[in-house]
Image (cartoon, rainbow, N blue to C red; front, side):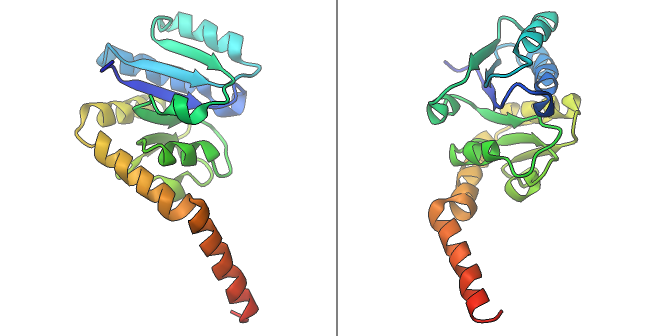
Length: 181
């Protein structure tokens, strides 16, 4: 019940680099023995990722949940949300993590830096760098910032990505356009 849960929600496709997440998980597990890792999603790489999980000695702590329709409930058990992609535009998953009040560790892709303020509500790491990814996950779990980062994530989601916020921003754009700005 008190063991940390690190999770990722993504399609199991090459662009999502779930192998990077698994390699980071191995390093986290070496430091935090009770850590658990949850992978939510399905796709063409499922078999090879399960094989890699075994090769890395993580079969006892990595859980492949497949496709789920209850993402908010699943994410609610995470202590840290991760995105390991090597390419994205703007990740909906990051926004879901923020809305759930999670600190986030994500790769420096697409609009990640718009949502994650490095060291404030999570960390942005170089693409493919599982060593730094694991270090940042450990920093969150071993530090005293996990709750504060989660609170700031939730605040960021409400301020910038909630429906009322988005409607206000679009309205401002249209009104500005109408006024010739």
